[in-house]
Image (cartoon, rainbow, N blue to C red; front, side, top):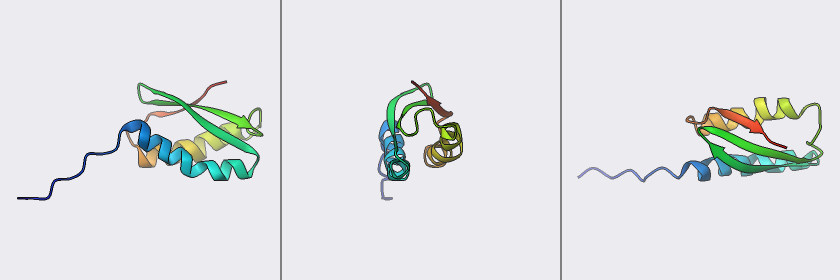
Length: 83
């Protein structure tokens, strides 16, 4: 009998794991990131601290957070920053 593959972790758990792995880097720059919700393949996050209003925040989300999330959780469409 072939070995059964374990079921993949729930979507929210996988996304949260990626965000939690990136959090120390964001915190090192005086900011933070919070997972608000996942809706129809879109991850809604809230940037806090120094990241709020930072001109580089959009770049951090798109080229940092979104890229890492989509690599590890390919069914995600993208990241949305919510106020």
